[in-house]
Image 1: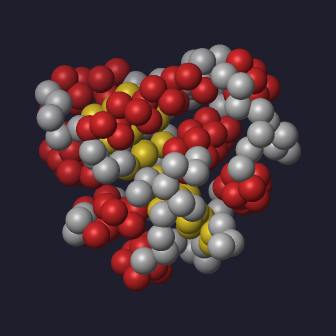
Image 2: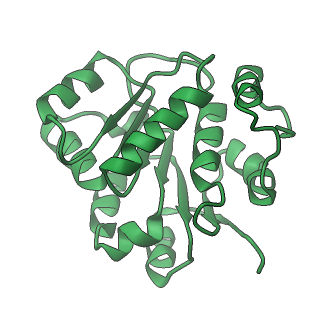
Length: 204
């Protein structure tokens, strides 16, 4: 992809999967996200939001470091967890980053053990992530990227309180909200936890 200073190992995987042209919004937001700024990213369903998430998280983390989770990606349901894990593994094929997915129907004890073994990227549903971190006492202050996919749908399902609870346990991180619509709830939650976020929205 024609993106400024993209990680060569990430670029290699993109080329192998015939992903050579970023969307306008992926290109426009890349530098801001790479800089560590908080971002709200609004684009139509099926327009490349999941790709933008994987692309930017892999770019920022680059390689495995330590044992603690550094990126948290919250998604709507089990199906989305499986899709996102597969996408991260495909694009991160040459980066050795440790990716794991959890959802409400999984075995929580198995999930906790996997996290204890060491992870870079944890993808999961809000309730399962919250359940795991509150019961196991994992340190959330190692999270460098806190990503909410389909934020408009997740907040509509009244899971905004879970997101706020998780964020309250983190001293400093980068918040990224991806949504199809900039709803009032997305705006309210962003106002509570983000610092002067950039808003990237496709023009009609």
